[in-house]
Length: 110
Length: 111
Image (cartoon, rainbow over all chains, first blue to last red; front, side, top):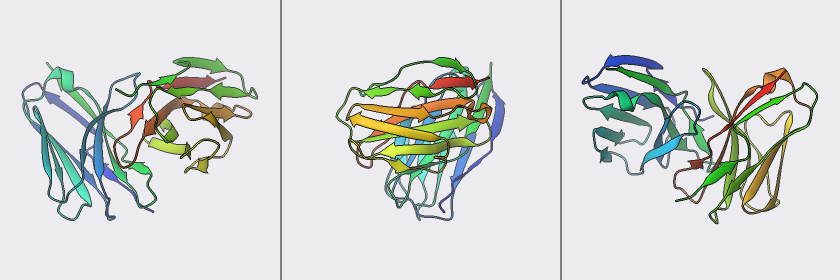
């Protein structure tokens, strides 16, 4: 069974701080995605990483896929209150389905 | 942009009722999925469909069934609602190896 472990589960920081969220597995994924979900809404896709070692940037967000395609990280620079939400990583499994991590709840205080 | 529409944002149903949750997508995507989301448990796959009239069980199919009579519509059915089916239900669609597009969710409360 393929599993994705996300850490930390909860993060509360002040505006302007940096943070990193981790997504780890013992399994290899063909691709990995990051989503952000706001209360009362469905998750929204932020990025998909496909190649081992790949780094993608989306404004203040930096996403990295591990060389072995078993792990990924999301780094946010100078967090803003608008970054508050639930961040989910998801890996494409060997059966073609997406497997989700448990999520990281981020609160950025002004 | 792909749009995924779930018929209800909030539903309250009584134990034992048959409940239908509808999901419609406006793109020609083959794959559609139903998840439930619960605090501390993340998103769990209930059922998915790769094509019209095709369905596959996900990780937690017990107590649920699905229907896909048209490509754009994927329905989730709770045959006899129970209180442990109180949850946020999310429909998603996708194509190939790309990301999913989710609906806004239906928060179902079974009393």
